Picture 1 (cartoon, helix red, strand yellow):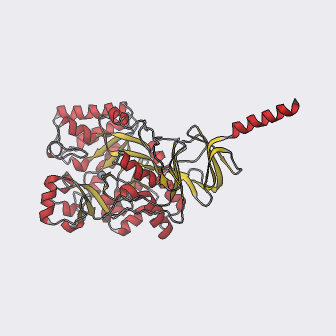
Picture 2: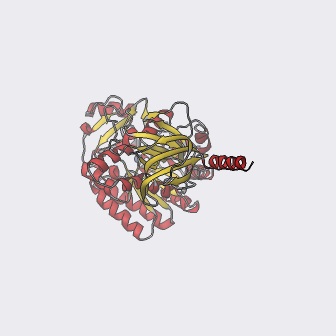
Picture 3: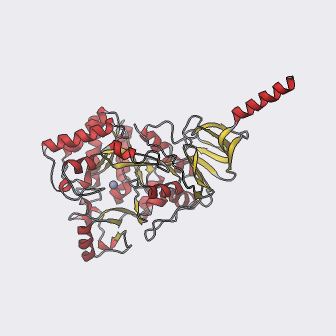
Length: 465
Ligand SMILES: [Zn+2]
């Protein structure tokens, strides 16, 4: 009798110790604590339930010997919010893909369309651009093309735009998305009102600044505008894609941001690891004088995404009327390298693919940093790169359950082979999956297994404020 009791108790104990899933024997790297050691990670109900030097028992055990186990990457700047884009994100180690720059409006419908159907976690800001496009009846889709570009808002429109942005925040959006360069006639007062709203709601603005490049009006005065607004209101500020705005002035921009932080402003920034940007040729970015604003480039530095062709004065005019994505080869390689190595700069893709066409950053941003800038060029350490992809964006979002490997954290994990992780997407063929991600877990569910996408799973959840 006593023996039977003991066996039963042991069985119960073993049951209690069994996890849904265990990642065994991997090199666990957690930027939040600096942990870098071989550990077993036990997962239960979508959360990390144990991180142990001793072996753990799981109903499923994934062998990670020789692999790095990191928090899943958080992409703060992912315009691509479709199943196609989420597949490329997962293969690049991204477990949370957020549309923070342009944002969305209305917010609830956007979340509802993805809930229960997404491969990775998703979320968005309440967007000033979509609100302005709706109120001013602009014909653009992702970005404004006409009415919202060509004039200032009337006082009535201004109030309606602000009310829509406010409503989006109250419906759970993750902050305010602002693309000033796309609506160049939005007054400084209109933008300042968005800062006041962010301060009132204690949230962050994610901003594409008014201007870029070295020629005034350029990136320095544009950065001064948003830093002044942040100082005047107390709102938190995230400046998107600093390299494609700053170009050769990027070091000075980073100096200004560092100075603002030393004086107590909450300012962060990000960049992608490529020497070209991309946007809609039909947008205000290409109004007269674009060559100077892009640092002195010409038609041949533009590459039409649909065909990969370089543009001429003739094809520029034709495609600009039509609208569509174009790569802008404008960012010096040494500036990309400087940004990757600067501790203030988080990693974010700014990517979007549509039927396989777009910029390679949509597919390869995170593995490109790990392969090219960490392993090959030693621009930054692996732990520092992981911090810029996980903990830093989680802190920007104010989300304590992501960006770290700790008991109670969401089981979003990227398990990869540091010796061969690399991007494969190119400007000519952007729709190529990255290599070297062996397992990627979203809320405890494998979405990548043995280096391949898992079919028929949708563990991604909407991230709300
Ligand atoms: Zn942008």
